[in-house]
Image (cartoon, rainbow, N blue to C red):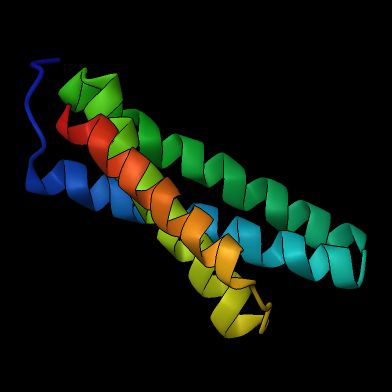
Length: 112
């Protein structure tokens, strides 16, 4: 396979993989609230799909650091949205600072 940079199809695979990861996170939280075999199956399926969608992206770019950093930002933001917006989790001001520094560190890794 010819290796390319970050193209529109790569972004598409990364977004799809990140959304699958987000779905896995959502259902893992549901499992924590109300454990069931069904949620275990859904969580495992979402995380398997996430990996399957990641592989075409990394195969096209062959750039682990940059590709993974973009995916990490997608996963990072989606996890915050799920926790805070959907499940109404509260974070202390220090935790928000930590999240900000975490996002900044991911960004620095991708730019450096």
